[in-house]
Length: 135
Image: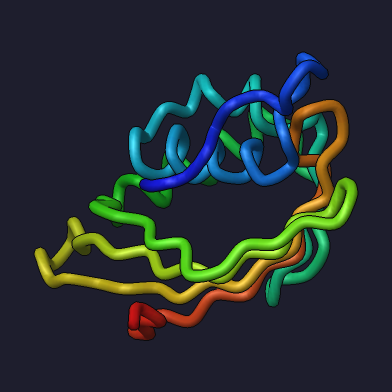
């Protein structure tokens, strides 16, 4: 996954965009659930079509572990990202394979993240299976 994941110059803190890139790289591509300790707050608030949930890191880890049993992510293509202060907006396509069927899958995501202390504290997300926003 391309992009700058360096700290903000001279501040010792990661940029808001770098936090979101680290989440997708480390958690989704590398399947490193231990990285949640460094990229999300405890708890983290998640707003999706399922509703609003406040999840502890442990609960988020459990949910992701279940997802990883059904899906193997091969690539995350970020098509657009912008930030304003502690808010980051992203548009991406996640590509991989269904572990149940072996069929290729794609999911288009659009999300907004609120960053607090170099971690994702809150997110608003929608995803659409079968959609690929790649050019």
